[in-house]
Image: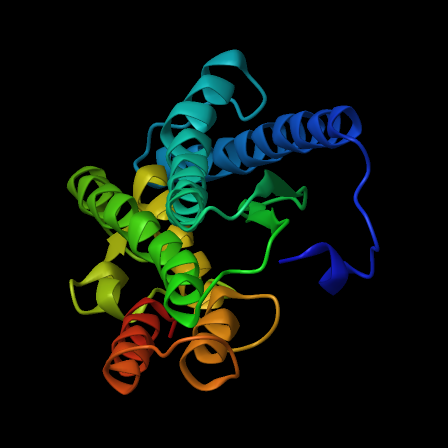
Length: 238
């Protein structure tokens, strides 16, 4: 997103922004670790190996098995955006992690990056939006596979949001998911949300790059949009 889209004529200085980024990052690590502790405690309880919820060992497991892989997915997603911005010579601020400190949730709503310059062409705008999605998926999918290896058969309590389609096709509904698989699942959820064609999601920027006004043209735009739509469908929770 750009400062004008946030209702700001100009951004604060670099020091306040840096402090804000650090503060939000620490809060996101804390909230994701707390969420991971609960997921680890539930998984161990389902495996008949109960552990204390509020303990150092559970905190370390919650961080290492859930928060670290989940935030790794988010970070790689943002690095994909940064890579494309660097190639297009678009200045950026961030990324800013977004904590979600609600008990039992993911602990984060992802992260955002502020663009200081408009993309020079529709092709570069597409690349900036799409590379984050692709980069995040390249990390999320292996994490899901590794999490499946540590999951065990069983019945899960109904979740507020279901498993992504790609996980359901692999039989995830018959498994009690390991925290590592849950981290990958939430990574897929964030990918699906990012592909929605609404502001300020990446999907909105892709549709704008494909069909909006701007310099240059986007080759094979219908194929690219259809491919991203199918990708979003595969990651969408059902």
